[in-house]
Image (tube, rainbow, N blue to C red):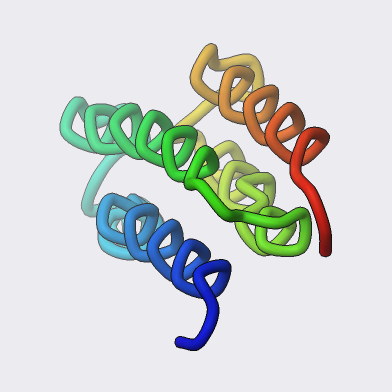
Length: 108
């Protein structure tokens, strides 16, 4: 971990990963042990959306770093299994936040 940019990226990834519903809970949905509409899963997912948005604002992230943090692939999976809808306010807000932060970021 040489540069502060690398540290910023790793910190953001760590923050996002700690609350990521894909890691622990999505498998439960796929196996039918949990429904996509489960209240607990919804709460974890809502929290994760907020944490993700906050992590995108980590000081020192470059455009290249932010591209690695693009939430779109994870959101697509959550939408695909029915945990989120594509018009969910949290999805819309996170996508807009990502686009805004990426547009004003500097460097590669």
